[in-house]
Length: 303
Image (cartoon, rainbow, N blue to C red; front, side, top):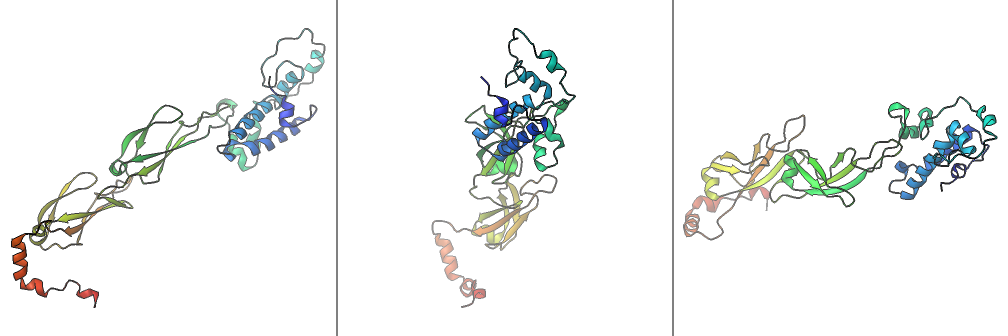
């Protein structure tokens, strides 16, 4: 059995329509789910208050409730055996008409009225709450973009489009995939926070990509062509002779894709790597290399 809407709104049975509207607005502001995120009790009370106002906020429905023709939810009651008061009450109907729910908020001159904007046909409803999720993606999937599926604990799996250039901590919005709305309102959205796994040699620097490229002593001294990995695929780069550790090569456009702009760049830092096992020929050469003995690579560091 539904509760008495007068009790729900906290007004007397002979209260004027203005007092009913004021009571509803006061309770709605206090209980609205957007102001009480995650509070199921407040959401249930808000629905109850809205349903009560749907009856009492409409003078015709209120009169029918007072006559016992409908219950507190607005549902029809079985006809009574007699209606001695019907004719008298019939003439008391005023010209006021209200679509119920949140219509009165259309004229409210405050920020809160934005929660109750009218939707097609004069009906108003409240948008469902958003749902929050998180997911992990590989570094290259975040850079290049991909489609992933996320399994929800309380519903079906969702296909999530990861846009190219997605950042760690970025939130993706899937419209209409949240909590269902009520009173004709639209469903909420699914908000998915993306966590990007680190890559073993790429790092992101804004819209640029940085990596350290190992090269052999022969490649460093003589130069030559080497293959350099980038997020969009390996490219061939020509090293100049005598390329030293720490030298940085810029690969234009081989960084992060940026919507509406040029891609970022890839910056490649060279690092000379000697063979893991000692090479007798190399050892003998360096032992007899006089220029190598006089070189001081730390002279700029001072004593």
